[in-house]
Length: 229
Image (spheres, rainbow, N blue to C red):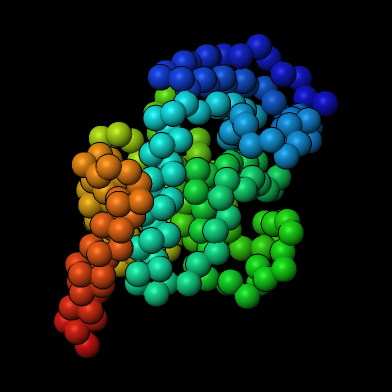
C-alpha cells in the first residue's frame, strides 16, 4: 500500500470540494478505486503520484449535463455515430495516469466496443472526445493524462470559455478554432448553448438545439464539403 501524505490542499468553491494528496503510489490509487467501488464520487485524477479527489457541486454538474446533451443532440443531427462512455475511469499504469472525464465519447472503433462490460486501455482504444468542466480546479493534470492516453480531442470548459484541444502528430495538444468531432462548431457557440437560460425548461432548449443543428451546423458542414471538393 502506498505511503499517503496528508492533503496538500483543499478547495471548496460553490459546492465543489477538491482535495489533492501527494505521495500516492499506483498501488494506492488502485486500492482507492476498489474501496470507492461503483460509486461515481469523488471524481479522481491521478498523475505521477498526485491524487486529486473532487466532489462537484451544482454549477459543475449543470454545465456538464448541458454540454453532454448538446454534443449528443448535435451528433444525432449530423448523423455522427457514437458510443457514450460517461465518466468511465481511464487509466494505465505504464502511463502513470488515471482520469475520469465529465463526458466521454467514442466515435471510431465502435465495433471493438460491442459487448464490452469493462474497458482495458492496454488493449482497448481511448475515447475520441472528452469533456472536462472546470469550476474549482485547473485541468492541467487531467489534460496531461488524456495526452498520455492518446485522447484525440478534449473540450475544456469554464463558465467563461470553452477551448477545443486536438492531439497532434507530435503527441501534444494544440488549441483549434473548430471541433474535429463536430466539424464547423466553434467553442463560443457550444458554450453559448450550454449557458442559455432563455427557455422555460430544458425540453424547449433541446428542441432549439435540434433546429439550430439542422438549419445552421448541418448546412455549414455541407458548404465546407462543397468548398473542399
